[in-house]
Image (cartoon, rainbow, N blue to C red; front, side):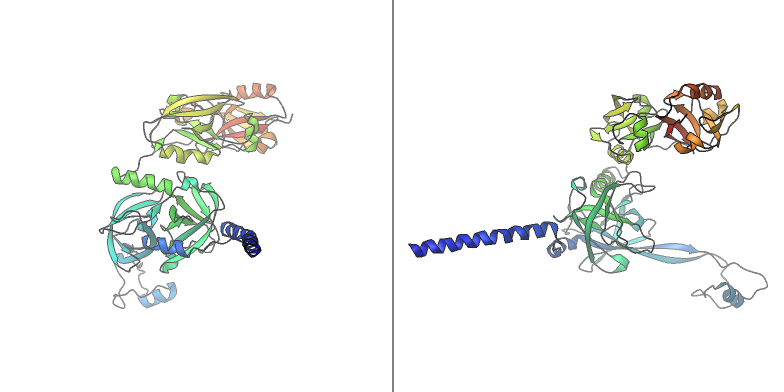
Length: 476
């Protein structure tokens, strides 16, 4: 009996000793470097190499009368063109093949493949090479340059395809894995973590990029970004680099955005986006004080375009959009992707802050349509004010109409002081100060006598045909 008791004591002691070891191992797996080998093994068959060929015209060599061709080549460093008889310059542009490499991944067993638009843009031929080295010609189903997403298809069945995850579930710090063809090197896996979410890049208004430190290089474009569950959460699209190689700043298109594009391309053959009809800007800390906001948040409406969903709903310049369709708008860059993915003609509730009070509007979106805008010219009375620190001039009716503005005065010179501190520039058109209209130079003169000092006041200006708000603090 005693021996049995000792035996159980030893076993229990062993379990007690082993428990911390197992717990530590679990933590190491969670916070340490994971083993990606099984994940790579399970997902690699869905990743493909994409090579494209397109014919481009090479400019003919300029002809200089009286200068022998060999001398021309010597002094200007021009090579001998293949197939060209020596001593004879081409009279017409020469056509030659241009090749490029990229990556992609299969999303269905019947051969649909996702990649970047820039990988296949303008291609005369697209070749997809599978992991088993089999090569197939692909056709383009549809592209969306705005999100840099392309859907292509190969004629095949029973293909291994990637499992699609949810980019909306991602968190900064999570491990991710990329598989692609960097620099044409066949089937390369790299890993890292998510560095940031909802990253806005220039000229990519409708894509809230996933930023990672995964080593992505030329040739990785169009390849998948996997989470640790083996699900695709993004399409590797861009890098920031001063050298052309990876610098730990890689950007991927969220898979939620990409799959929305896929569904539209499959069903409609094109992508249609919701259009609200507002020009927005970020709410800075100074602007938040001007608008009596507890903290910087939302998207500040600089201008509402006529005839759009926003104008019809009653949204005005100076409103701060806090929620759209039940989704919180923390930054101004949050709004365009949400609006873009909202179905056309859907009635959506919008929560805004107007002069310190919350209001709700219902908007019915139309499709995206860019309106032409025109530049401004100035004429009329001139007014200089030392309290503001700027010289302004009135605008004629024709100029105001061309800018779609009911009123405003143009700044012709900034002389320092509050105007310069606020960021007001020569050429800006001042429309309102503290939500009060500036219709004439006399209006501004009267206003300067009554506005409070040492308080941040929102000033609406139009700059380069874009409306924005600036925080003005009068110090005397």
